[in-house]
Amino acid sequence: MYGLETNEWLKLLVLLTFLLLVLVSFNVLMRKLLKVEKKKFFSYNHVNEKHAKIDWTIRITFIAVLVLGYIINMSRDPSDWLWYLEPWYLAFVFIIGSEGARAMLEWKYAENRNAYKLTLSQLLFIVILLVTIFTTNFFGII
Image 1 (cartoon, rainbow, N blue to C red):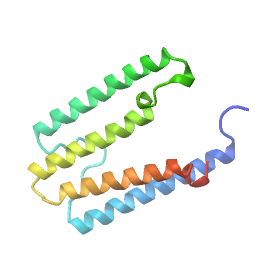
Image 2: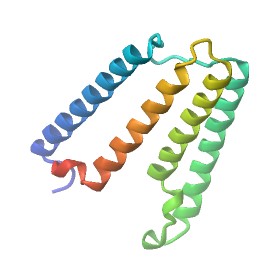
Image 3: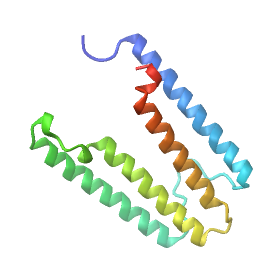
Image 4: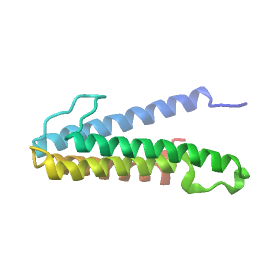
């Protein structure tokens, strides 16, 4: 009665596998086109110390706004929640802000002048992909 049925889990797994494949393929293609070296997976790849400080400021601000948004929305009726304090919206803004800051600092300080182009293309691709997924209701899968 509650939760997802077995068939729904399979659809979700297929969707996530497809998205991962599309994102990885796009990143590999863009790295080759722009001649940008691959970064380590799941590591902090800051351009310089200034980037590290800005990145941590964005992260701490995001967490604070996320907690504050939770407190504000929990004190309201569920039908009256503020959409701009919803976690999905805040996460979307966080990704754009964090990657936008990375692109700006790569443009200013990175040794490879194409690094910021790669970051911007990845960000634009992810934004287009996420907007497409949500507006098409996950391509009709879910």
